Length: 245
Image (tube, rainbow, N blue to C red; front, side, top):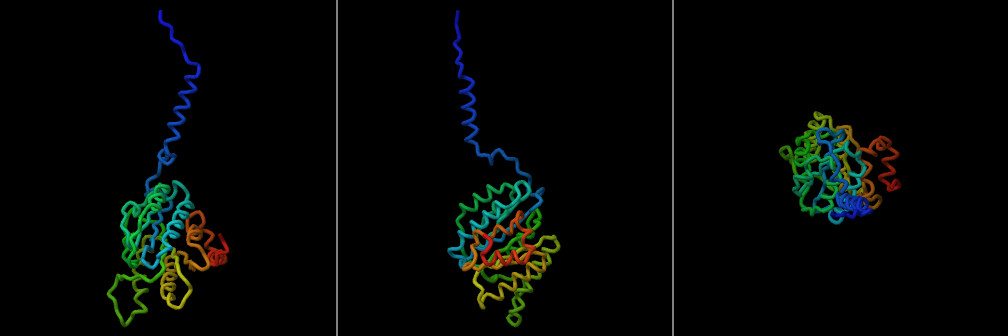
């Protein structure tokens, strides 16, 4: 006759083993993410990685990650389009915002010029259709969608902007814009252009002067969870002055 000796702790040990295995699975892997086309917020960010951004690139990354943290989960899909760096995965709308944040933080960026118009138009015409666009830059675009006319240099920026505006309004997608740089005489054309782009599409314009406000902390106010606050001019002024952390 064979006797089987049962271990009274067997069930407890099995439960502990299962718990350890479950702990090794990231919560993100267990989540079921909606398809980007189903997301209420489909935001495309135009990320300026031009050479002039220099040491502020990491702040821009941090600010964009904070933006992602302020998007309602499983209601938002976000894509990030760089001006110079190619990354098809980040340029595709993704509702797994943790995945977007991790890929962005790890991404090495290639600096270059400011081909803002061509990148913006490509993003506007990429499906699934966006519901909003957010652009930040520290300078004027270096490309053009129209034939350059040296006699009308001052109007060239707005002529290009009108093409972008027409497409954004056709899609009913407001464009929020951020100028990142000092309030100096040499950048007034860029500021005027970005204000025009936002106003004509129903978006918001903010000026982040690095001497006053940290991009890493302020960019989150353009995210869906905070964006309604921007309807208040006083709130926008607080953000731009650095008084609102």
